[in-house]
Amino acid sequence: MTVEPLPLQKLPPDLDCNRLPKHVAVIMDGNGRWANSKGRPRIMGHQKGVDTLKNLLYCCRDWGVSALTAYAFSTENWGRPSEEVAFLMTLFERVLRRELQEMMSENVRIRFVGNLGKLPNSLQSEIAKAMEDTENNSGIQFTVATNYGGREEIVQACKAIAHKVQLNDISITDINEDLFEQHLYTQGLQNPDLLIRTSGEMRISNFLLWQMAYAEIYVTETLWPDFNRDEFHQALSNYQKRDRRFGKVNDSK
Ligand code: FPP
Image (cartoon, rainbow, N blue to C red; front, side, top):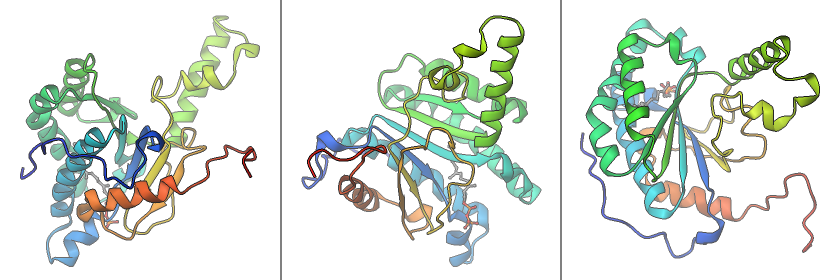
């Protein structure tokens, strides 16, 4: 791995530290195309994508963004060629094993969200260890969506709530948005303020469907392995120009 934690680098002066997104979510798209454009196998794009993600994590930390969530593997990604799926599972495991110590010393809190019980057992063990070891860290919250599907997450929340009603633990009148959020994989995590998708695709692809209700969406043509601090700077600059009204009207206008 070529990435080293950079010394603290300041927020670019044109950005307002009081108007930063607290939580940034990323759809890391374009790894395969990046590799193909260089005449390399698709998996090289995923490998390079890990470096990009680590750089972004440190950039968020350096600039004062308190949470980063990355879409690493969707429930639909099982439909990819079996060699690519196997490579990704091994990559997640290898990266977790290799990076855990550094994540501890950098005070990062790691969490995986998704239908984790369907992942290979050895990966599940690494995930459990990473989550357990870092749970008391107080630095940036890093969430990795793996075998994640927004629709599946909503359905499992409905089932869990229905079960509680059936057992008379709660009544139907107790069901509200707060209670619903408590049954999502992301329970306790604030909703993303900004979603960044690379490679020019204008879709949310079943990612954080509930949580993204009022996220600002930023799409760049840049392929994920080439996404860097300058690109993130542009995304934040664009975000700070948005007028977030949450369905209301802006009093000052
Ligand atoms: C989408 O690009 C990328 C993925 C499905 C995998 C992303 C995973 C990583 C970058 C590894 C992250 C690792 C950890 C440990 C969190 P694509 O393959 O769909 O690209 P394409 O659209 O060009 O084909």
